[in-house]
Image (cartoon, rainbow, N blue to C red):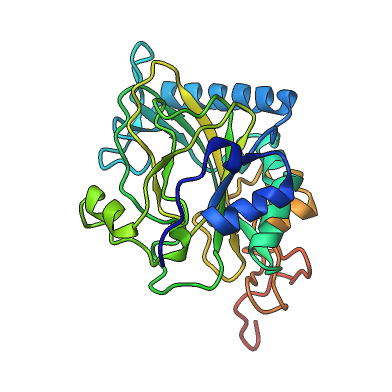
Length: 308
């Protein structure tokens, strides 16, 4: 199938949900303007900035000179005078109420409801990204790359909340419009060869701070080279259909001090529901463990023997 021509900025950027859905269906992505209120964007910026700084200070930061999924990624400290080109802050629901509020953003959930065709969905991952000068180009890929067959609808939706402007010289995502109609790329092949094989052209995504770049998981895309002195800051909140394994296993990784603060809606979004009372079941890990499925709760039941 021939890939559609590159859309103009006016065609791909909207604040209207129905237009955004149409963009995703036609091009594989959209830019949703005014996704974040100014207060929410400021709160997200401040919390992400503080968390990133403290993780660098304590030697717990996920760093790279290449960028997202860089081959040189390491965990450690950083020289504040010259931090690496890229820092990732993972597992954000553990690191602040404001991130869990973003996870349940009603516009994001409405996009998921429509694009997943009514299938229940959960959080796959939520990650903060800080990209500075010198970030490298990422391999051209799709987010459902591990799936060895084409699916009739996307199984993940990536909602990239832009805390800063999102510009080409800041390493903003490059997308091939219409590529969600193709099979997944073989990212072991040269980048330019893959672009040519798609029949389309790369489109440099532009978005103002406060917008969200939303794409579906069959869309070919990659981070681009970062040459700007300005930092690109964003949060990728990725959702997946309930029968697909999330990237982050929240029932296992959510902190003990965070779990009591979760609402039932947050627990459901983080995978504490059991679908059809059959998929996603778990029981307490000890007689004192409060964790369980939101829709029903089992008592702790150990191995038992007669006479014990």
